[in-house]
Length: 149
Image (cartoon, rainbow, N blue to C red; front, side):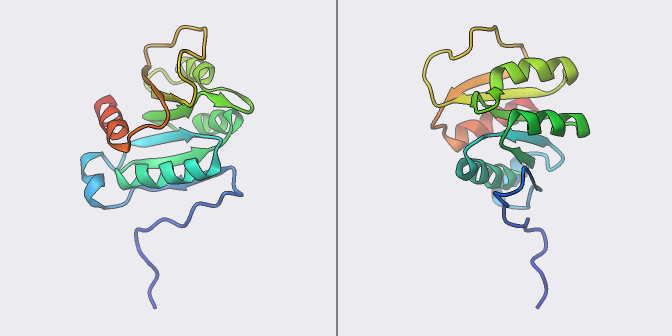
């Protein structure tokens, strides 16, 4: 029996960083398969679902659950886009976006929060293209990300 080619291994919730390569699917034709996206979400189930959906859209996704792991990923690899949760156990996704903008000025960010209103008092950098309140429509998210590349 031959292995499934082009299908990424299931997400391992025990690992700190999961890479999910973009796959050839109807949704992936709209996004360049070379577009790299850093996903920062502390909820493991939501992180897994988003990583799979974004891979279906054609992005090469690195999914992490902490600000620490996001920093490590950015230092070791270039990303075109980032989708960050704002409220995280080890920090604030909006503040991390501001910090990473100084390190990687070409990276674009979409911030998501489960809390309505403006949970951060600091002004957002121009690299933040959207701030969304969860739940977010995957089609809206795809359109935002596609417009950022």
